[in-house]
Length: 164
Length: 248
Image (cartoon, rainbow over all chains, first blue to last red; front, side, top):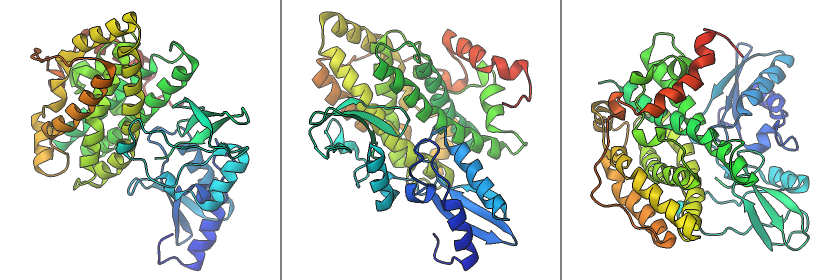
């Protein structure tokens, strides 16, 4: 949230923050770090939302859900798409990371993706047993934001939230 | 020469390659690649959407991103020729992706210093996504180039087939040059060293040789395209043109 937030802004933010990610419903838009701020002026609540991936098909749905949440709290709602600075997986909160892990998705490493990591294997821990004896099955998983892995210790296949 | 045209060049590159890659959906050789292809496609189409919306905003005639994508004809499309090349086999598709991503990754990195807010915003996301595409396509180029006799031969053929379309990546149209002079877009020719470094590194591991002294085919930035683009647009635009203004 921006420094000059009012109590009203905070109230509206709390309302919008409860919207879950439609593809990973265990985590909400605040924990995911894509709800940047909410500003209220003359009954109009404007929410700043950053997309995760350029082509994330969930962006539109998330914006509609935030609009609905703000409307049901009595605001006239507007969405402002915030592209800069770009969202990074570093913005997923610690609470969000833990929720992802419990949900069965290995959370992203807390370090922005670097081109120098080209062909460098990142160590990914199994969300079930915690072992780092895992292997990548596919660079791309069930959604744009995930890769597919398998744990060689407990044999569990799992999604890994890609680090960008 | 307008900024709008310079933005459209970038948007068209991403949309047309995004469309090409999406043609693999349901046809990729293994399930993992069937997931990877549409995901890479979405990255590029997502980038194109933001750029089209910006181009429409610059035109300021009440147009939308859809008008830019669906209502311009073949001669109005400004993509480079590389991105419209047919998919061919998996070797060709992956080499085309590697060539494009190895250019766009340093380009978007440089664009983080743009004087333009929208360009900076797009660049921040796209640079990371293109790094991912380099890794994915690069792994395939290595796997096939240093694979069986058959796969190695196919990679070599792909290198020969795509060689004429590389140079155009590094050439700036008059519109792009104006945007480069204004500090809005990075200078295309400046990406050569980074591109060479990436390609040489991967080709070394893939046991492939780069193609020297090839005739460079150009014209895409002037709207002069190969046969393939018309087919892409026919498929992509048919619904929007048959039902003008339809919403879905």
